[in-house]
Image 1 (cartoon, rainbow over the protein chains, first blue to last red):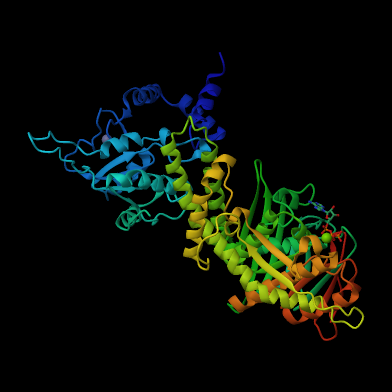
Image 2 (tube, each protein chain N blue to C red):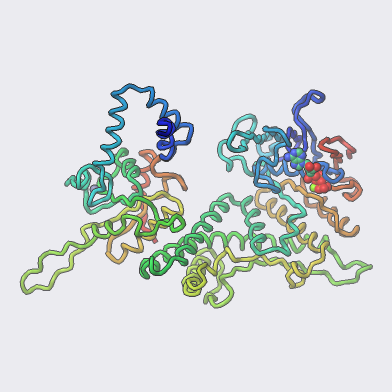
Length: 212
Length: 406
Ligand SMILES: Nc1ncnc2c1ncn2[C@@H]1O[C@H](COP(=O)(O)OP(=O)(O)OP(=O)(O)O)[C@@H](O)[C@H]1O
Ligand SMILES: [Mg+2]
Ligand SMILES: [Zn+2]
């Protein structure tokens, strides 16, 4: 069998933000830690993988079929904030600045990295915007209802990929009569949403603009 | 900013402290106006200009590999520039260090001993305009080289320019990738929507780039023609020719071929519209070609002599005079914009010019230039005329000594 420490550390090194050296340090720390901690850690890792799935509505990570936010009646269902990653949704929630619902794309449009619309959770966003057709009454023409969503706020990071994603969604959603806006770049240009602070996110949401 | 002293330690062929020669490295003091560095081939003259350029831009004009700047066998190099900041009325000290680490070689910058974290806070403290013999290649070279030449000048005027150029390039590569995608993999409607998306971004950023380049060319046109006429004056008894007119024009690819916009394109919104229109008009052709065939990535800078493209037409001396005239125009433009003249760095400037043009060039320089550092293999080539303050320094195998002063 290969050296178990080497094996663990090279597995850890595959995680984002962890280099060879940190991976080895973590692996050694795990070796030295007590039995209870190790058991809890390995349990948590397999739990997370077994039980977390994508919310059937917003595609955020959740342990229930529909996530907490999507099933909370107090959250405004007419307002959807589109983010690229679950951690961006978390940043907004931490800041507590948004009362609508979310949609997680799991990436941004980037043909150079092989990411087109099909690789993103775009179809499920479209599905959420479709008008809910009521049963037509006897003798009356079928009434075309409006989309249950008033506004889609695209909150991708302000860089080439994030901007392209926003623009793409605007073009896609325009025909549905939904207003599509983009958070203002209160987040430093080229900056990552994930690391933005509360006031910045608040301002960015307040100053959103429609996408031309 | 007025340059006072430069210290080089283990930079290129300049030594740091040694047992025989303690102290911080090799030092030199600049003249108030002209500093003439002379010495044999390979002495280290261009290396001095490279160090100054590094203090201005954090980059070398010869290499992108910072390791090449370390003196052979050394892991740490230091360049320190003492200058007088006219804005503050104070002496200031700029320092760039290059340190070879286990994984990479890093540059760091300090101002008055304090580490500057963002490169943009350091750039441009010392404004410099550089001429190197390599610049001559741009006339005969590819349009890409000329675009880069313009973009470098623009970067000194407007820092946002580099980021916009990078943004544009990424958008362009993204659009091209979509154009090349197999139709079987990307349904028609999707493809159209994605191309619309990238067209929008390209028109927006592309118009900015186009607008800035066009503005620069227009600003430089007159001073450029004037400087060239002065250096390359042919109304000379011996030559008897008519004066050659030097022209400068920006060739926007969008204005040629089938996509002529209906109205004149004069401002940023107009350019954005024209570009958007052109991208729409050429989409079919672009899809067939698998790449984008209009936009500022295909534009060109036209340098002309009496209406003929200089690349095919100008003699070696004329080419040199043209490029130098461009640099002088750049200097004059900066003076007008900021009220300050950048330092002019001239590498190996006077070779190929006949004695008359050489004299004319130095006459122009003496008039136009605030501070200037130039290199030559022989100090006799540099005739600045009487009454022009100059300091001659001899460079010899990485040593610098004062040769004469006036
Ligand atoms: N990293 C380095 N370490 C040590 N020496 C170097 C290094 N890089 C370049 N050199 C030396 O520096 C010298 C080149 O210096 P430079 O280009 O400044 O010459 P120059 O005085 O401008 O000559 P020329 O008149 O031919 O243009 C060469 O002798 C070269 O070997
Ligand atoms: Mg040289
Ligand atoms: Zn959900």
